[in-house]
Amino acid sequence: MAMVPAELISQLAAMNEYERLLAADAASKNLGIKLDDLMNMIDSHLKGGAQPDSTFTHLDSAPQEQQTEAPKQQNAAHHLQDAHRYRMKYNPSAESTSRSKEITDAIVCPHCNAPLGIPSVRPIKVNCPNCMNESTFHI
Image (cartoon, rainbow, N blue to C red; front, side, top):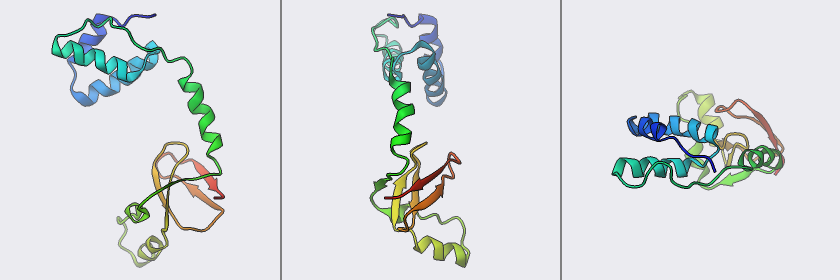
């Protein structure tokens, strides 16, 4: 079991919340531990509680699971409720408004989990504006 250096916990505790989250995410991947466990260690340090060398859970197979998950979802869309929430309103043109009315389904991008509003036409090829990956949905 690897130990988290007390110096790292102190450095992370001194950062603001957003910077701490980003740095803790990178550190947890480098150390091979869960982000939640590292954040709990930081919280304990901030409260003056447990020592930074607390026990934590090792990540052994998590990255492999994420890599195999995306191809399974390639053709099957994970549908979301309330598709009307995913109609983009940043373009006020008549063409954009008419396309927005065609949005009847909301799905999740299989690559980055971004919500996407799409028409009910199947099969449909979608380019995710968040991760720029292309997916084809048959269901």
